[in-house]
Amino acid sequence: MEILPIDAVVYNQEKVNMDDVTAPPYDVIDEKYQDELYKRSDFNIVRLILAKGENKYEEAKETYTKWQEDKILIPTEKPSVFYIIQKYLNEKGKLIERKGFIARNKIEEFSTKKILPHEFTMGGPKEDRFKLITSTGAFFSQIFMVYNDEEQIIENKILPKYTSSKPYMDIIDDYNIENIVYLIDDENDIKIIQKTLEDKTLLIADGHHRYETSLRYSKEHPENEYAKYVMSYFTNSADENLIIYPTHRIIEKNTDKNEILNAVKKYYTIETCDSKDKFLNKIEEENKKQITTGLILKGDSNFYILKLNNEAKKEINAPDVLKNLDLTALHELILKKELKFKDEELMAQKGIKYEKRESVAFNSINNGASAVFVMAYPKMRDILNISKEGYRMPQKSTYFYPKLLSGIVINPIKR
Image 1 (cartoon, rainbow, N blue to C red):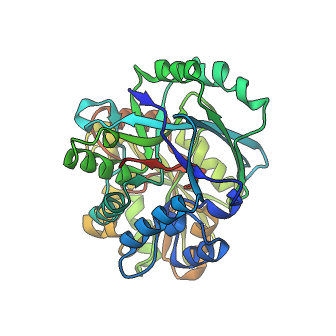
Image 2 (tube, one colour):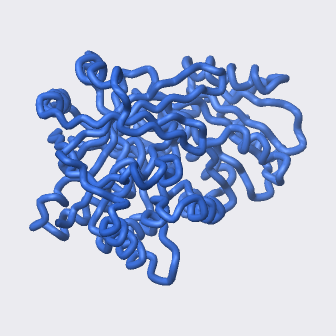
């Protein structure tokens, strides 16, 4: 994979506090949070990635231009790579330090197998992002890419040179995650990064809509050399700090609990647990041996462990590589076949909700939901195997945590 440093535009830290101007990706910002970010600073990146007004794309363009004129946004002295360490405590109090870097990569068609998607996309978000890029001529957020390097060359050879010095940025975000950023502009260090990734395949972990948007833009502007590359964040799957969280399925349409139990009994062996902690641990333990999913029901104090029967796999209408996925079994056998959800309803989350926050999923039973299917943690090997064979997982299958901040670096593609 061809990797290049970024001819970057960044915030002028003499004029802004980085804690006040960064924001999560646009697709996790609801209207209330958008208002909060607007109030936090006149220069918050949300005013570019999610502008308000009747013509929000033109507004974003005008704001972007004015911030550069007023030196709120300034260019870096040299093309650079931005190395980020994200520190946080997980739910068990363990310190996690996910490492990765922001640079540019050559945009490739999926048919080349150099870049692999793993989830489906929808037209609305892609059109929205395309209009923003076309209007402003810049990428404000990065694609989340995963590569594999068992030797961890960048982590061992490059990173130690920088971590002993003062970071370029040190940002505490709204999720209490510390984002420590080091600026790499040494040409020799950049060459090592390029050499490390030159033979690697990339998996899109997050940002499928943005990647497909950048692909479309590059095709429509073949004369633009900058548009042949997209800004991405790269992290190593060999690092144990790369954690993938599941996205749970909440059944919101009114469904009798006995109907759901009778449906799952056709395909799964059912066990019960008497506590939430045992329930969650059991899902992970059993899922190492066979496809296992959790279930909680409205008006029922039991925690159900669902272990897929071997014979049930044969009834799944999907390619073999997808039959090994818990979400495929759930979608094909239970949601579609038994509970009669249509594909378009699953895509539009009509009568069903996809929720990554475990606490929200569990509480939904008290807020009117009929059932919650609690999913096991996704396995990187399953994601890679599915992607390599040219297939995609069901919508909202994975949640790579933590999200990446927008506003650390901007990648102009119009000069």
